[in-house]
Image 1 (cartoon, rainbow, N blue to C red):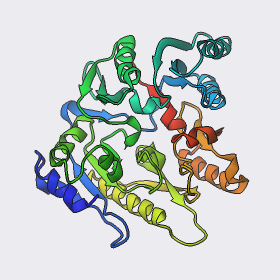
Image 2 (image 1 turned 180 degrees about the vertical axis):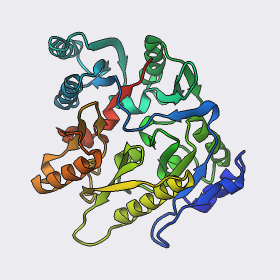
Image 3 (image 1 turned 90 degrees about the vertical axis):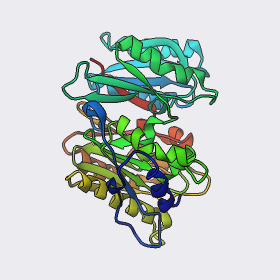
Length: 369
């Protein structure tokens, strides 16, 4: 995407042009990051990546039952509640056995839903959760619309989840995946250029670009960094390369390539500069911890160690034994530094990453009254 084009089309919207400023960049190497400032109505904010949920929603799937079981056990061990739903491709009998095995020692903290979903990526189709400080009710959930994508069960899920928990749910007239954003919980958000392209914000759709500022404000984002991401990561979701682990702390993937800086490494450097610029626009500074990440290899989805899940007393980090112990140990040490005193627990996400995601993609913390 041409950043100049994005800026030009954004100026056709309702935003004040003075609120759009390009971030610092690496000239001539990768796309410039762009910072979009927007107004968030009724003091709303998108929940932060590091906020601790009282309940976690997982999807039982035959694609990676061991990883799901490991995550579920860690959620229950942390003291959180666990909500389960099965995808359409799983066996009802296998789902029942899975639920029973977890229910026995859980002391009533497992809730199994009978509804079905189409895909296990709950972060993407689940409700977008916002908090409104000083408002009653404080919780506000948004339901992104995905018309005509053939995933009717996924599209219906936010409504029955919201109804079950008695939370207000508003329709968001935009096809938006939850994993596409990261948030610091206080108005700082990050989104990739490439994801916007997947959603049709290109030369052929200036109207879509013009409403982007309004969309971001509706999500509770006051400053949003639009950044480049990894070339071969097909979802273009920012949660695959970065995550806020505290109000002013971010961990970001850092490519380790013995052959020298790759284009992906330069893209991540530009992304970091853009995120810092967005934070400065809000008068904040960030501590950023780089997490060792292998270079992409043809035919394989890039491995991510930052796509994890924060729980009350631990952090679940995706691991990949096939990468070798040295890299895994250094990645874990970096993540441990990022999350400070919270112990890091590694979950083998090799099967998950082959399908395009990891722990954060497949687990949704629920913040309910």
